Length: 326
Image (cartoon, rainbow, N blue to C red; front, side, top):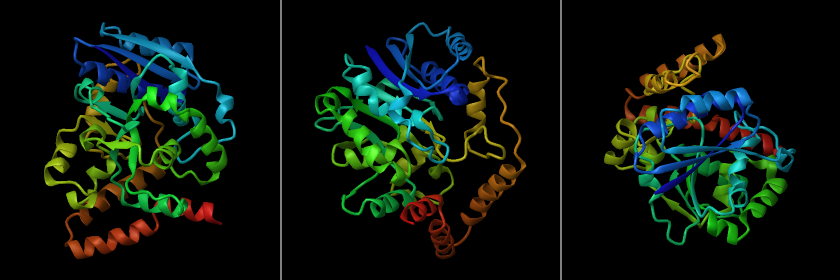
């Protein structure tokens, strides 16, 4: 079976892209062929070669670099650590006109299980399959930003099984572009906002183990993520896909539970000598964040809930919403 996978990257994220692809192939089913499409937002020839060389040992793959017309999103402002490459996935139905299904993955992930299991997930009448978002602020703030659009659930778009055929038939690439052009100043989380709003009732929720995000590793318990105890345990201790959507494992002061696993995969690539420039301010900030969470998780629920409420009032999403509301 051929498994179609897509990533978006530029030179800044190429070490992490390479690590993600390496982990994917390392844990793949060797009976399958993996066609990996890299939406190229400015990857040098040298870095392309380093990526190819890092993956030489895997014979069951083909890598395709696809240049993207940057002018399509030239007026889009960067959001947090996102840049315009995060929007490229929205063009996939037209970029790959002969492909009917694909898994899109962010670069800040590790694939720890056989991804073909996700590829075989049935979408039925839905257009994409994604995992629910766990951060309690996102859906709330998104709804306040778009009060006239009912948002019954919200997804994290870092892992997305996409029915390109259906999206293409309904001309969704143009719909996405038009929405971005009209709402670029209000986007809180880039392309994730676009998918949550435009495809609000066309998204199938898939098991959260396919997108174990950073919030799971700092929150006190499963109730805070609206998960069963079983699913919470799986996401924390036996995830299929790890998503470092918060503090990155390569960031100064990161204490992510899977930081060593990330470094293990990175060291098996030609980017093994990559090191983040030391940032003392980030070191202090991240140490306070992690250690503060450890202490908070030991507190009684009533005190924890009070602290969490105060924190969420000043969360970056709330701050972003206040900015765009001015």
